[in-house]
Length: 223
Image 1 (cartoon, rainbow, N blue to C red):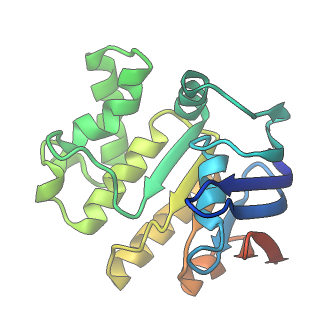
Image 2: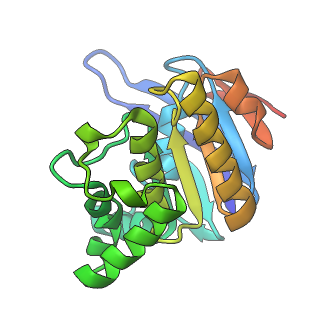
Image 3: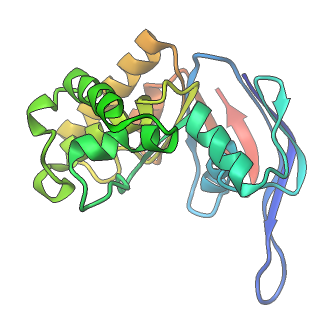
């Protein structure tokens, strides 16, 4: 499903270019659940941004379902993200002035689906994740675990091929972390959605099929 070959990415700085990714090679099969680990500055978040078509890369290639994704315009990238990729973030990235239902339904708004239909679909996902009774609550009225469930429902609503989760349990206590991990595992198992999790927590990483360790912009182990 995903094939990355000799991927390089640098950023310009005031003094000298910062070479963040230094020849990444990685293949991920459809339906896999993998974790990416590495210290701060190792390049794991940069890699995740490229996988999510949030950032371009300099050299190499990134194939998604045998389609080369490179030098996309922002419009092309946005269309690709909205159709194929769901995102789950440590900080939830919910819109504070919208309630849970509106937050979950938002991706369907960008697909130009009517309000009645998108709210119906959003409510079904909230019910699936145990939040039906909380649909009208705004993020400030929800616990951390509830907010992450709303974020996961939002990621699922477009039936994505791939979910990218960046430290999805980083802002949660241990009990909520376990619940969210179990939820992600169930989604991967039952929906066959490919899942890539960036984490610094070994307990989370060990629960995935493979652990990809990145150090100084290269993969130094994959098991």
